[in-house]
Length: 501
Image (cartoon, rainbow, N blue to C red; front, side, top):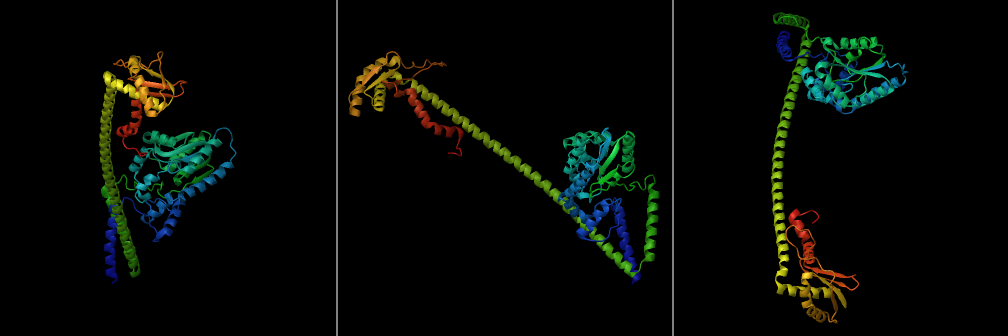
């Protein structure tokens, strides 16, 4: 039974070992099998305390925990608490006044945040992608960490010379990093120091130690040093005090990624085979039934975890594809709706212009008809009489003053007596005294063309003797009355139905 169990174990072990070495780009550290938030909290504490080193990815079961920590408010509270401790320390420093009091700040995830980049990498559950991170940094869209921006402003205003030290490459990311910092409000620092060709290949600890050594040799006294990675705060000339910001998404300490660099593929495969054979022999020698059962259970859990990770990857990929397709359909439909709206708006505009032209032509025709009223002498004579009678009915005065066009004076005189008698009969009043004004006449008929001189198309104006009551009964005045009465209808035709109507 034991032998059969061992054979099964060996078969499963070989399968999993092949899968782990063949597909995983980085080995995962051995973690205790504890589930839920308790494990993730313990894991993060060990990471922040630098007790778990050279980890490559966040445990998959901690994805939601890290996401909640980073964007749910606890990260901001932790940063603010830490900044409170830094400010307490800063307020107790007596500056030398010689301009050589220095403070060092890391850049990425210390001054500006890369949380949007890590969101696309499942908050550190996916392996670090240097090319993807460089593409993100090239956008210059890293937002400021609010608390650190406040600390930066406090340090500058207090008289510290602030040095921004980053491992970003100066040649490719120098300009975009400077602009990103300035756009986010980091203005007034002493110097932004990026990695030059002279430091390529150096680890973060060695590189930043050399930078701090140069500052010390220049005479600067480093009072404080803030970073999100232990590699920012280790080495030489770290300063009087160091402060580490939380960052459970990325480990800056590099575990020799070039373990087999310089070794031929044949020798590399041979070394791996020897390691495997040695490990397998040791395991088989020490196993008993209980160990076999325990190992199988661990492998079952491992297989289940791998399956869950793969299912989660498929789900995330499907959701991304769905969202992209949905966005494409939405944008296409929105474009169609806008095109249809523009087409109908043009149609409405064309209809309004046609209606306006028709109304304008009708107005011009009415004006031309008005000008020809006085051409028919017989009809115009009757019209003048009726206008005088109507004006007298409106005024109801015993004595009035009448004004007309100079060309209409004879016509008015010929119908005046008849008009007065018609008024007296209609109003049951005595015949009024009507005096024709021989000194002031109404404007003459229009001369045609584009003349802008005052004109009158015909009619009369009657007023009381004291001039306080005036009845303007010219053809132009009557046309204006009709226009004002028709104005709502005209407005509706030209502008369309409004909400107020």
